[in-house]
Image (cartoon, rainbow, N blue to C red; front, side, top):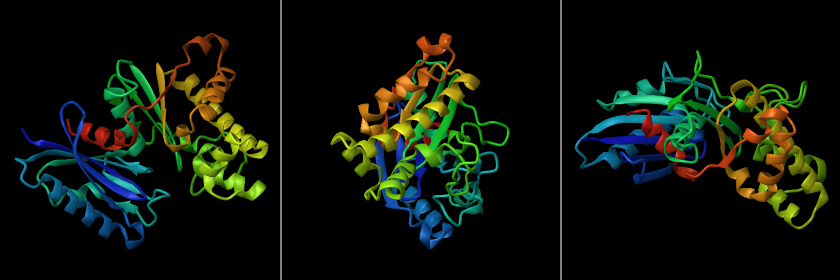
Length: 297
Protein backbone atom coordinates (compact mmCIF):
# COMPACT_ATOMS: atom_id res chain seq x y z
CA UNK A 1 0.00 0.00 0.00
CA UNK A 2 1.24 3.45 -0.89
CA UNK A 3 0.87 6.78 0.88
CA UNK A 4 -1.72 9.54 0.55
CA UNK A 5 -0.38 13.07 0.65
CA UNK A 6 -2.38 16.11 1.68
CA UNK A 7 -1.14 19.65 1.00
CA UNK A 8 -2.40 22.90 2.49
CA UNK A 9 -1.19 25.77 0.31
CA UNK A 10 -1.59 29.05 2.15
CA UNK A 11 -0.49 32.61 1.66
CA UNK A 12 2.03 32.26 4.50
CA UNK A 13 2.97 28.58 4.66
CA UNK A 14 2.89 25.35 2.68
CA UNK A 15 2.11 22.24 4.73
CA UNK A 16 2.70 18.80 3.21
CA UNK A 17 1.64 15.72 5.16
CA UNK A 18 1.25 11.96 4.95
CA UNK A 19 -2.20 11.03 6.22
CA UNK A 20 -3.02 7.44 7.19
CA UNK A 21 -6.30 5.62 6.52
CA UNK A 22 -7.64 6.73 9.93
CA UNK A 23 -7.18 10.39 9.11
CA UNK A 24 -4.15 10.83 11.34
CA UNK A 25 -1.12 12.93 10.38
CA UNK A 26 1.88 10.58 10.26
CA UNK A 27 4.47 13.03 8.97
CA UNK A 28 4.31 16.74 8.26
CA UNK A 29 6.60 19.32 6.67
CA UNK A 30 6.06 23.07 6.72
CA UNK A 31 7.86 25.76 4.75
CA UNK A 32 7.13 29.45 4.07
CA UNK A 33 5.19 30.00 0.84
CA UNK A 34 7.27 33.02 -0.20
CA UNK A 35 4.60 34.30 -2.57
CA UNK A 36 6.72 37.35 -3.37
CA UNK A 37 9.11 35.07 -5.30
CA UNK A 38 6.43 33.99 -7.74
CA UNK A 39 4.31 30.91 -8.29
CA UNK A 40 7.02 28.88 -10.05
CA UNK A 41 9.28 29.21 -7.00
CA UNK A 42 6.47 28.11 -4.67
CA UNK A 43 5.50 25.16 -6.87
CA UNK A 44 9.13 24.01 -7.04
CA UNK A 45 9.30 24.18 -3.25
CA UNK A 46 6.08 22.17 -2.96
CA UNK A 47 7.39 19.50 -5.33
CA UNK A 48 10.63 19.24 -3.34
CA UNK A 49 8.66 18.85 -0.12
CA UNK A 50 6.66 16.00 -1.66
CA UNK A 51 9.87 14.29 -2.73
CA UNK A 52 11.34 14.72 0.75
CA UNK A 53 8.36 13.40 2.68
CA UNK A 54 7.87 10.44 0.34
CA UNK A 55 11.52 9.39 0.26
CA UNK A 56 11.91 5.74 1.17
CA UNK A 57 8.17 5.04 0.89
CA UNK A 58 6.81 2.40 -1.51
CA UNK A 59 4.79 4.73 -3.69
CA UNK A 60 2.46 7.74 -3.67
CA UNK A 61 -1.17 6.71 -4.23
CA UNK A 62 -2.44 10.26 -4.60
CA UNK A 63 -1.72 13.94 -3.93
CA UNK A 64 -4.49 16.29 -2.81
CA UNK A 65 -4.03 20.06 -2.62
CA UNK A 66 -6.21 22.54 -0.76
CA UNK A 67 -5.61 26.14 -1.87
CA UNK A 68 -7.23 29.55 -1.48
CA UNK A 69 -10.02 30.38 -3.90
CA UNK A 70 -11.11 31.36 -6.36
CA UNK A 71 -10.00 28.28 -8.26
CA UNK A 72 -11.32 25.77 -10.76
CA UNK A 73 -11.09 22.26 -9.24
CA UNK A 74 -12.15 20.57 -12.47
CA UNK A 75 -9.27 22.04 -14.47
CA UNK A 76 -6.90 22.24 -11.51
CA UNK A 77 -6.35 25.97 -11.98
CA UNK A 78 -5.74 28.75 -9.43
CA UNK A 79 -7.66 31.90 -10.43
CA UNK A 80 -6.02 34.81 -8.66
CA UNK A 81 -6.80 34.50 -4.93
CA UNK A 82 -6.20 37.63 -2.82
CA UNK A 83 -3.59 35.98 -0.56
CA UNK A 84 -1.64 34.47 -3.46
CA UNK A 85 -0.90 37.61 -5.51
CA UNK A 86 0.32 36.87 -8.99
CA UNK A 87 -1.32 33.44 -9.12
CA UNK A 88 -3.56 34.24 -12.09
CA UNK A 89 -4.54 31.24 -14.23
CA UNK A 90 -1.89 28.99 -12.66
CA UNK A 91 -2.37 25.38 -13.80
CA UNK A 92 -1.25 23.94 -10.47
CA UNK A 93 -2.36 20.35 -11.03
CA UNK A 94 -0.56 20.18 -14.38
CA UNK A 95 2.60 21.70 -12.90
CA UNK A 96 2.75 19.23 -10.01
CA UNK A 97 1.67 16.23 -12.11
CA UNK A 98 4.75 16.59 -14.30
CA UNK A 99 6.88 15.32 -11.40
CA UNK A 100 4.82 12.37 -10.15
CA UNK A 101 3.00 9.35 -11.55
CA UNK A 102 0.26 9.64 -8.93
CA UNK A 103 -2.96 11.53 -9.62
CA UNK A 104 -3.10 15.11 -8.31
CA UNK A 105 -6.31 16.78 -7.13
CA UNK A 106 -7.15 20.40 -6.25
CA UNK A 107 -9.92 21.92 -4.16
CA UNK A 108 -10.67 25.09 -2.24
CA UNK A 109 -8.93 25.07 1.15
CA UNK A 110 -12.24 25.58 2.96
CA UNK A 111 -13.72 22.60 1.09
CA UNK A 112 -10.75 20.50 2.17
CA UNK A 113 -11.24 21.48 5.81
CA UNK A 114 -14.99 20.87 5.49
CA UNK A 115 -14.39 17.35 4.20
CA UNK A 116 -11.97 16.61 7.05
CA UNK A 117 -14.36 17.86 9.72
CA UNK A 118 -17.27 15.95 8.17
CA UNK A 119 -15.26 12.73 8.01
CA UNK A 120 -13.18 12.78 11.19
CA UNK A 121 -14.07 15.92 13.16
CA UNK A 122 -17.02 17.76 14.65
CA UNK A 123 -19.24 16.99 11.65
CA UNK A 124 -18.76 13.23 11.81
CA UNK A 125 -22.05 11.34 11.74
CA UNK A 126 -24.08 14.15 10.17
CA UNK A 127 -25.62 13.92 6.71
CA UNK A 128 -24.97 17.57 5.84
CA UNK A 129 -22.13 19.69 7.22
CA UNK A 130 -21.43 23.32 6.46
CA UNK A 131 -17.93 24.37 7.49
CA UNK A 132 -17.02 28.01 8.08
CA UNK A 133 -13.56 29.36 8.75
CA UNK A 134 -13.22 32.85 10.24
CA UNK A 135 -9.61 33.92 10.27
CA UNK A 136 -7.67 36.35 8.07
CA UNK A 137 -10.57 35.84 5.66
CA UNK A 138 -13.91 34.04 5.74
CA UNK A 139 -14.48 30.82 3.81
CA UNK A 140 -16.92 27.97 3.70
CA UNK A 141 -17.60 24.52 2.34
CA UNK A 142 -20.57 22.19 2.15
CA UNK A 143 -20.34 18.41 2.53
CA UNK A 144 -23.39 16.22 1.85
CA UNK A 145 -23.28 12.46 2.44
CA UNK A 146 -19.50 12.55 2.67
CA UNK A 147 -19.00 14.43 -0.60
CA UNK A 148 -18.00 18.06 -1.10
CA UNK A 149 -20.66 19.98 -3.02
CA UNK A 150 -18.56 22.17 -5.32
CA UNK A 151 -21.23 23.53 -7.65
CA UNK A 152 -21.15 23.82 -11.45
CA UNK A 153 -17.92 25.84 -11.61
CA UNK A 154 -16.47 24.88 -8.23
CA UNK A 155 -17.46 28.09 -6.41
CA UNK A 156 -20.07 26.65 -4.04
CA UNK A 157 -19.70 27.49 -0.37
CA UNK A 158 -17.97 30.85 -0.88
CA UNK A 159 -19.69 32.47 2.08
CA UNK A 160 -16.96 35.13 2.36
CA UNK A 161 -18.18 36.82 -0.83
CA UNK A 162 -21.82 36.85 0.28
CA UNK A 163 -23.14 40.43 0.38
CA UNK A 164 -24.32 41.32 3.87
CA UNK A 165 -24.22 45.11 3.48
CA UNK A 166 -25.54 46.47 0.19
CA UNK A 167 -23.19 49.13 -1.16
CA UNK A 168 -20.77 48.50 1.68
CA UNK A 169 -17.01 48.65 1.76
CA UNK A 170 -14.86 46.50 -0.51
CA UNK A 171 -12.13 44.15 0.63
CA UNK A 172 -9.63 42.93 -1.94
CA UNK A 173 -11.34 41.56 -5.06
CA UNK A 174 -14.54 40.57 -3.26
CA UNK A 175 -17.97 42.15 -3.62
CA UNK A 176 -18.69 45.47 -1.98
CA UNK A 177 -20.32 44.65 1.32
CA UNK A 178 -19.06 41.05 1.35
CA UNK A 179 -19.09 39.16 4.64
CA UNK A 180 -15.29 38.79 4.71
CA UNK A 181 -14.95 42.57 4.81
CA UNK A 182 -17.03 42.74 8.00
CA UNK A 183 -16.52 39.56 10.01
CA UNK A 184 -12.94 38.40 9.37
CA UNK A 185 -10.01 38.96 11.69
CA UNK A 186 -8.62 41.36 9.10
CA UNK A 187 -11.87 43.33 9.14
CA UNK A 188 -11.91 43.51 12.95
CA UNK A 189 -8.36 44.85 13.02
CA UNK A 190 -9.08 47.31 10.20
CA UNK A 191 -12.17 48.69 11.92
CA UNK A 192 -10.30 49.07 15.20
CA UNK A 193 -7.53 51.05 13.53
CA UNK A 194 -9.78 53.25 11.42
CA UNK A 195 -12.37 54.06 14.09
CA UNK A 196 -10.35 54.16 17.30
CA UNK A 197 -6.67 54.01 16.29
CA UNK A 198 -6.31 50.62 18.00
CA UNK A 199 -3.16 48.85 16.83
CA UNK A 200 -2.36 45.14 16.93
CA UNK A 201 -5.13 43.61 14.84
CA UNK A 202 -7.97 41.38 15.99
CA UNK A 203 -5.98 39.81 18.81
CA UNK A 204 -5.42 43.21 20.42
CA UNK A 205 -9.12 44.01 20.02
CA UNK A 206 -10.13 40.83 21.85
CA UNK A 207 -7.65 41.60 24.63
CA UNK A 208 -9.27 45.01 25.07
CA UNK A 209 -12.74 43.45 25.20
CA UNK A 210 -11.57 41.24 28.06
CA UNK A 211 -10.39 44.39 29.84
CA UNK A 212 -13.86 45.93 29.47
CA UNK A 213 -13.14 48.35 26.63
CA UNK A 214 -16.51 49.43 25.21
CA UNK A 215 -15.21 50.52 21.81
CA UNK A 216 -13.48 47.18 21.24
CA UNK A 217 -16.61 45.33 22.38
CA UNK A 218 -18.72 47.20 19.82
CA UNK A 219 -16.34 46.27 16.99
CA UNK A 220 -16.46 42.59 17.93
CA UNK A 221 -20.22 42.70 18.44
CA UNK A 222 -20.73 44.15 14.96
CA UNK A 223 -18.46 41.54 13.38
CA UNK A 224 -20.28 38.70 15.14
CA UNK A 225 -23.61 40.16 14.04
CA UNK A 226 -22.54 40.10 10.38
CA UNK A 227 -21.28 36.53 10.80
CA UNK A 228 -24.64 35.56 12.27
CA UNK A 229 -26.40 37.08 9.25
CA UNK A 230 -24.20 35.02 6.93
CA UNK A 231 -24.88 31.81 8.84
CA UNK A 232 -28.61 32.53 8.91
CA UNK A 233 -28.59 33.10 5.14
CA UNK A 234 -26.90 29.75 4.59
CA UNK A 235 -29.38 28.14 6.98
CA UNK A 236 -32.31 29.28 4.89
CA UNK A 237 -30.72 28.16 1.63
CA UNK A 238 -29.02 24.90 2.66
CA UNK A 239 -30.45 24.02 6.11
CA UNK A 240 -27.47 21.82 7.11
CA UNK A 241 -27.54 19.46 10.06
CA UNK A 242 -24.56 21.23 11.61
CA UNK A 243 -22.29 24.21 11.14
CA UNK A 244 -18.68 23.49 12.08
CA UNK A 245 -16.84 26.76 12.64
CA UNK A 246 -13.10 27.23 12.96
CA UNK A 247 -10.35 29.76 12.35
CA UNK A 248 -8.36 32.15 14.48
CA UNK A 249 -11.24 34.50 15.31
CA UNK A 250 -13.22 31.64 16.85
CA UNK A 251 -10.33 31.00 19.25
CA UNK A 252 -11.56 34.03 21.17
CA UNK A 253 -13.95 31.59 22.83
CA UNK A 254 -17.08 32.83 24.57
CA UNK A 255 -16.43 36.40 23.39
CA UNK A 256 -17.57 35.17 19.98
CA UNK A 257 -19.39 31.89 20.51
CA UNK A 258 -21.96 33.06 23.08
CA UNK A 259 -23.27 36.08 21.14
CA UNK A 260 -23.03 34.22 17.82
CA UNK A 261 -25.33 31.42 18.93
CA UNK A 262 -27.90 33.92 20.20
CA UNK A 263 -27.70 36.22 17.17
CA UNK A 264 -28.18 33.41 14.65
CA UNK A 265 -31.39 32.39 16.40
CA UNK A 266 -32.70 35.90 15.90
CA UNK A 267 -32.20 35.78 12.13
CA UNK A 268 -33.87 32.45 11.27
CA UNK A 269 -37.44 31.19 11.21
CA UNK A 270 -38.71 30.60 14.72
CA UNK A 271 -39.39 26.98 13.79
CA UNK A 272 -35.68 26.49 13.00
CA UNK A 273 -34.34 27.84 16.29
CA UNK A 274 -34.32 24.49 18.15
CA UNK A 275 -32.33 22.92 15.31
CA UNK A 276 -29.55 25.49 14.99
CA UNK A 277 -26.40 23.51 15.65
CA UNK A 278 -23.11 25.41 15.75
CA UNK A 279 -20.03 23.41 16.74
CA UNK A 280 -16.35 24.36 17.05
CA UNK A 281 -13.96 22.61 14.69
CA UNK A 282 -11.99 19.81 16.33
CA UNK A 283 -9.17 19.18 13.87
CA UNK A 284 -7.56 22.60 14.31
CA UNK A 285 -4.69 23.35 11.95
CA UNK A 286 -4.59 19.83 10.50
CA UNK A 287 -8.02 19.98 8.85
CA UNK A 288 -6.58 21.33 5.60
CA UNK A 289 -4.02 18.59 5.01
CA UNK A 290 -6.35 15.84 6.21
CA UNK A 291 -9.15 16.99 3.93
CA UNK A 292 -6.82 17.42 0.96
CA UNK A 293 -5.64 13.82 1.37
CA UNK A 294 -9.24 12.61 1.30
CA UNK A 295 -9.50 13.84 -2.30
CA UNK A 296 -7.17 11.00 -3.26
CA UNK A 297 -9.24 8.13 -1.82
